[in-house]
Length: 206
Image (cartoon, rainbow, N blue to C red; front, side, top):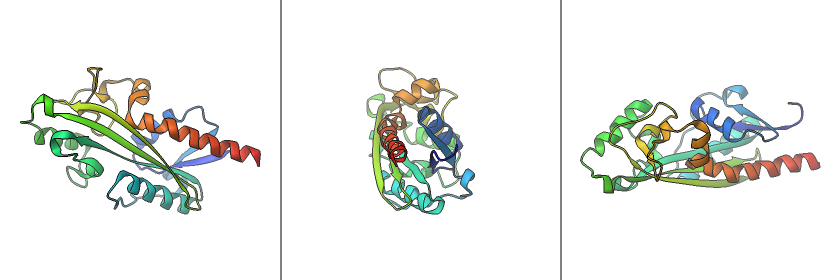
C-alpha cells in the first residue's frame, strides 16, 4: 500500500483479526496481523484490568514491529458470578480450553442460577499504541444475559451463550454486520476509528 498508514492488529486469534478487518473497513490504512510481521506466540496478559492487558499487548507489539498497533482485552462479566470471568475470560476453563469448553464450563457454573440472576455484559478496551509507547484507550460495553444452552454457529468465544438485551438472539446467531454494530468490540471501535483517522490525517499533512 505504498506509504499509507500500516496498523498492526495485536492478536493471534484469527476470528478477532477478521472481525477487526470488517469493523475497520473503509479506513485508508493497511491492517496487518501478527503473523504478517513475524511475531508469533502469545503476549503474556499479566494485568489485573482490561486496560492493563490491552496496553501490555499494544506497547510490546508496537515496539517489536515499529508500527502503530491496536490491541484489545475483552471479557464477559456475569452478575451471579460476581463479575467473573472478567479479565480471565480466555483462561476461565483452563489455559488451553477451546471455545466450546469455555462455554460448557460457564453454563455448568450457572446451572442452578435462575433467569433473573443471569445478567451479564461484554466489555472491550482497545489500546492504540505508537512505537514510542504513547497509548490511547477506547472502551465499549454490551448488556445481555447468559442462556441455559448455547445457540448459534457464528462468532467465537462466549458468543453462543450471550443473549443480547431486547433482541432474543445470542451473539452467535447474529449476522456479522449486525453483530459489529451492537457488540462491545463494535462500540469500542467507533472511538478507535476516530483515533486512527487522526493518525491518517496527520500522516497526510506531513
